[in-house]
Structure formats: C-alpha cells, structure tokens
Image 1: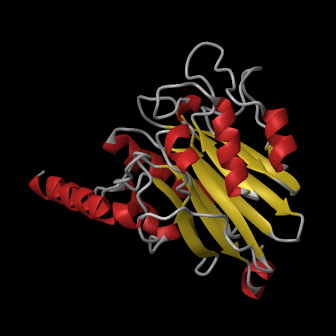
Image 2: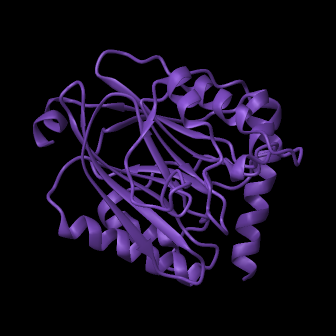
Length: 272
C-alpha cells in the first residue's frame, strides 16, 4: 500500500510540475496513410462545472475530427438508459455514425459504450457483458475502412474494482484468442493507472504490449491519472498518442479525450 501511495504521489507531483508546460493540442497532421482515433469518457455530458451540456461534447469531438471514436458513459445508467447525445447533429457536423447495436430503444450504445466511425463498412459487432458488480461492457467491431484496411476495434469501459478489472481484462484476452488475427485497437476508460502484477494493464501486455507511455487524462482540469488508454496488437500501428487538451475539453467532461494517429504500413495492410 505504501508503494502504491508513493507512485500516486509521484504521478501527482509530476503532473503539477508539468502543468505550466501544457499546450493546446490541435488535431494531428493526417499524413497520407494515417487515421485518427480517439477515446472519450463523456461523463454523461456533465462537465466539470456541474452542467449537463451535450452540445459541448459534440464540439469537443469536432475539435478532434476523428475517423473512429469510442465514447463511454454516453447513455443514462438507469431506467430507459436513454442516449444523451444528438447523434443526427453529431453526424452532420463530424460525419461520424454509430456502429449498430442491439440495445434498449432509446440507448445509443451498449452499457454506455458507443463506437462511431466516418467511412467504411461494419462487418460484425459483438456486445460483450464484462464480469463484475457494475454493469460494464465492451463492443467488438470488425470494420472494413473505406481506404481498404481491415480494423478490429474493442471499445471498453472497465470497472472501479481492481479484481473486476483483472477479470474483465481476461475476457478481452479470451476474445482476442477466439478470433482471427488482424490489426486490433483496444481503447476506452480502463480505470487503471497502476502497473505491476495485479494490474489489468499488465495482463493485457501479452497481446497489446508493451504498453504505450501513460498519458494523464483525468481529472480534466489537472490531469494526474492515466485512466484512458489506446492500445494496439501490432507494433507500429499507433504512430502518435496525445491527450486532447483544450479549454473546452477541460470543462465539457471530467476526462480529457485521448487521441491516436494510426499508420497502416504494407505489412499491416496485407494482414487485415
């Protein structure tokens, strides 16, 4: 416990020291062959000012201009689990459309997870109920991109309890083991900043490791913890990682979006 507390203290101290160096993150330079993806916990569209404002979330997504984005907490948690975003407006402003899921009539996604993409065809979608006391889930989508690449995306929101995260990571590994080999992204809010034998992240290294450097994304106003992750099962697929840190993003949700630029080399193209 003392070691864990020490790690947290060092992480917080480094974040505070680096605060003065935080610059506004603008969209990646999308060079030929690159693709921008993002993961964003929208906190049910409630910002750090306590206001429910879905329009701000759409504006932040527009700032990022992603080709693929995984959202967490995009539905109400209880009752009819209604979706909280104006998806037609989001598509009009960004070109993003959700992968189809079987859910309650008013829901956007599966257990709060929504996966959206701009161009291409969804070949297959699986909704996975993850173990644990909380209603957590993952979406597994096989997408044929308009440019010809095949990409599997696993969008997940892991639990708050450590033992549950370990079990949930094992389920994700089982999914990968049961499917054909192809370029795969795993992204979402993993609620895990720790490393070591008991960490869900360490379990995932057998398929998605070595892990990219941690990038603090929570809390949005002064990020100290790397709760959000984008990982790939192919070396070189993720060319760049960055947190999307703008004045609007700092207030729209309690998490900052995590973004990545992908590059599909010849080996990755042929493997799809």
